Structure formats: C-alpha cells, structure tokens
Image (cartoon, rainbow, N blue to C red; front, side, top):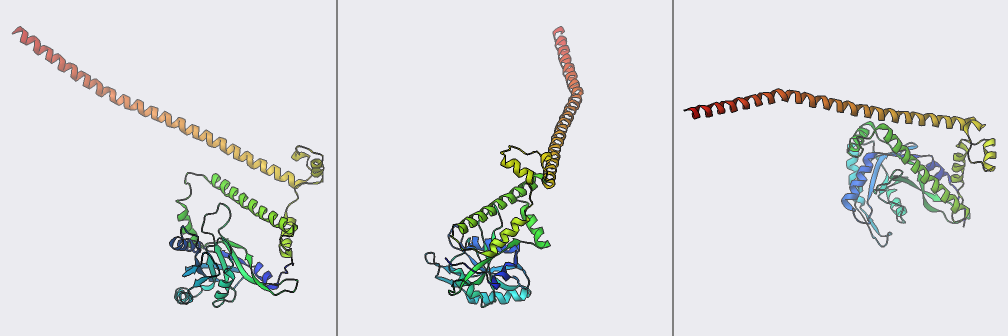
Amino acid sequence: MSNTGTTTNELTFLNKTVTVSPLVLLSVVDHFNRVAKDSKKRVVGVILGDNSSDIIKVTNSYAIPFEEDEKNSNVWFLDHNFIDSMGEMFKKINAKERLIGWYHSGPKLKPSDLKINEVFKKYTSNPLLLIVDVQPREVGIPTDAYYAVDDIKNDGSAAEKTFVHVPSLIEAEEAEEIGVEHLLRDIRDQAAGNLSLKVSQTYQSLLGLHQKLREIANYLDKVYSKNLPINHTILGKLQNVFNLLPSLGGADDSKLLFNNSNSVKPENSSNPLSTAFTVKTNDQLMIVYISTLVRAIIAFHDLIENKLENKKLNEKNNADLDPELDGVNGSISNLSNEEKGEGVSEDSK
C-alpha cells in the first residue's frame, strides 16, 4: 500500500473553518421532511455564504430537484436550470451571499459525490460539500464539511480526487440566537435549574470527547496494523495535542504507581499542578454539597411555613363559622319553643 503525501492545496483547506447558520440546518431538515421522510433517499441543495477568508460562513441555502438510483448511486439527475434561476433570485435579495457549494443529507459520503462536486465547479472554483445529518445525534454537531483535492501518491501513480475534511461549527447571529432560544423553550425543562443544565452540558461534552478519543484510537490501530496509510499531517496534529496535555503525575507519583500503590494523597504528591487540581476539585465539590444542604433546608422551611399558614387559615375559618352556627341554633330553638307554646294553648282550649 502506497503512502499518501499531503499537497499544498490540502494544507490550505486544513487551515479553514466552516461556520454553519442554524437557518441552514432548519432548511435542510424541512427539505428532508418534505421530500424524503421515511425513505432511504437523500436530498441535495445549494449553500450560500462567504468564502473569501479562512472562516467560511454558510448563511443560507435552498433545495434543488435531485433524483438518484437507489441500486446504482452513479445514476443521478440534477436540475441545472433550477440552480441558475434560483441563484438569480437570491442575488436580488442579498447580493453578498454567493454560491459557495452544495449540501446533502448523507449521513456519509457516497461514490457519486465527487462527480456531483465537479458539476458545481461551474458555479464556484472550489465548491464546499456540507453533509447535514437530519437524524438526531446524542453527541456532537450534525454537520461535516469537505473540500475536493488532488490525491498525489508517492509511488508516482496518477493523481485522483478525494475529499478532505474541514472543521465545522454552528454559529448564529444575534437575531438567530433569539429565534433559537424561542424554539428551545418548548424543548428545555423550565423547572430545571442552572446547575442541572451545566451538569448536562458538561456530560454531553465529555461524551463527545470520549467519542473523539475512541475515533483517534481506532485510527491509530488501523495505521499500526497497516490497514491505513500513514498521514504525517494527522500524526503531527495528534502529537501537538499530546504535547499540550498537562503532566499531572510527577516522578514520585509514577514510582508509587509502579510500586502498586492503591492511592496517592494530594499532600504526598510532589507535583504542584496535581495538588492544585485536587484542591480545586475538592473546593468545588464542597460548594456543591453545601449548596445542596442549604437548598434542602430552605425547602423544608418553606414547607413548614406553608403548613402553619394553612393551619391558621383553617382556625380562622372555623372561628368565623362558630357565630353563624350559634345564630342558626338559636333560631331553631326559638322556633321549637313557639311550636310547643302553640300546642299547649290548643290543648287548654
């Protein structure tokens, strides 16, 4: 298996970042639900934005007619005239938004994507492919961005086109953030506090980190077993990541670990960074514990106050009812006495 070299064109695209607007995600999901819901089909559309800098902004999109043979993905149809007419109308609305690429609902790359990408070179020199996963994900963002580059091999064989992955993220303007917050009101639990939201967000972040670490481990295993060629660019980035990791274990800690020590106390560690992390974590956990106790005490206090208020209201209502009952009993006794008097007078007659 031949090793693949990294071209200058590929390095240029690796320095770019793609930002996707939430409006684009909503448009793609709406397109999929209208055309290909409950089927194995994918939908294709055009993305608009600005690609003049290293930060590529995808701000708008529109759907286009697309048909594909389910058995043979190399057989497909794309309406060029529709792209031209819609592009002219979008220019009249916002001239700053240009056609920068295309999207499909994926969720993975397909063999025909390179041919479709060649079609879009008629409209832009380097079309961006944005894959939007319309199915909900538990971890990570639902977008993947790619650029087509020439794959030059070291063995001297002919160069081939291939896709290189570009980092992507979701970024909204101020007006879009307000709209997204309104949409999330129906999804979020309003009874949940800020602490529970932060804990859930941290948990989701850790799940995403764990998934990425597993992907890195699987890639390194395949490279080690020679199932994949060595890519020095990827290995260099991984080495930079490992170099940035803080060394929490000092020399004394490693000796204790090799001596099968069960636990290492912070005060016995000679590494000040490890001690600082441990002390900081203990302080934060103490704050959480005290806050939980205070919250429980306040809840019990409110419960007791509520019961006392209800007891006072019941006593007051009973006190207000007693005079009325006395009046009713007095009237009843007077009526009974009058009836008895009338009965005695009739007997005397």
